[in-house]
Length: 484
Image 1 (cartoon, one colour):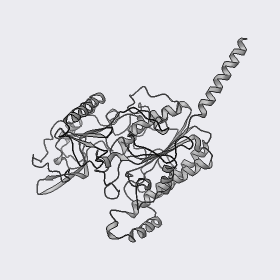
Image 2: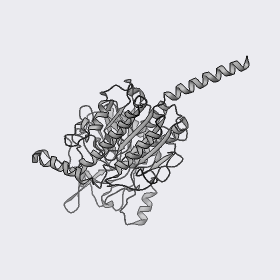
Image 3: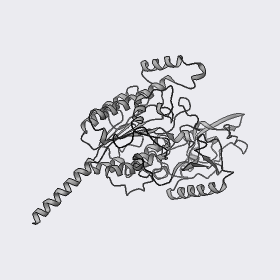
Image 4: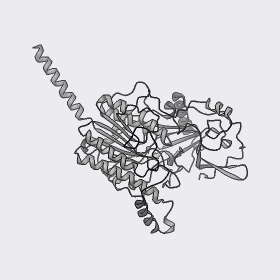
């Protein structure tokens, strides 16, 4: 009697485990580097050719309000892997320091080019910034691995020497986990070759593949025959329609697109499409010199929309409705809890998880209203906020100390230099040209209180000490991109 009961219980357990395992989807996450929001066909690109990405989007769901966790590469990747916002993992920019002329920085923050070593040491003491992810932080592969997943990272990592639980980790698809392959015209193909082998080897699943391309990051280089084709295409356009189209950049986008096409084709060939979730996105906004940013404001490095809004689409055959669209804001920190839910994995207990499970969105359902946050306490040189500087010249920052949130259609940005705020209605004004802060003080007060509460909860470093070597005066605050 007891033996029979034990056998029945064991059979039921094994049956449940097998059914549970069968429901675990393979997860493929493909990320481009510096690909702008509108640099793919399904988002309106006219010169760039992305038929495979467009097909992927058409076979699944596109997100119109997808955001990167940071305005540049390293913080976004840390947000993605850890499920936590930037103040928790303390990664804000590669190198961990401001880039630009310290004489034009009103606040004392770490700066790469500061020559005064004593002052730089004082700046570094203001708050902690990391250049790599703490190995103790639990990341996606460390959540999925114990749930039975095989895991691989192929491509750019940018989070330090620790591979955070990936079984296979290769920077170029051939060698070890480390190395830099910017401008390598063959690396996209190499990464894809290795990705296809990983998919083949683990076709019985479940597996998690993180395919993270070096393209389309500078230096802009591509195969000459492809560049020649796009140059011919550009030459046929009237001068008035050429904008900032760059044949080399277009060729790099094509390299990423071909990779996406090969991965999707392999999934379909193996007959695992109905049990495979494929995600495509970018790590931040594009560069103004080559990316099609308008009408959005800003660029890579900025907390304005063009710096953090990214293309994103997902496909899960038979689960996600084809040609569906989601307007709900989502961000990088959401993927860890989402993948954990789909895989039956356990959320980390070593660190808070700031993201939310967005899997209901994939099934056409809703999630609870919440705010999305960004924090950047440093400066980044580049096209953006332009100021007058001594000598009758101008200087421009694309990134500057600020904190931001989006809740529903509302976005608030807090600038730390002068403790000012800007309020935008993104439904009516996605270009962020009309600052509503002065006309909506009650809404500003509510959103700013939430923002400040979040800063306190995450220990977000807010620089307050004036830079003693700053040569700007009160008159040097004129913005050359006025709001209408």
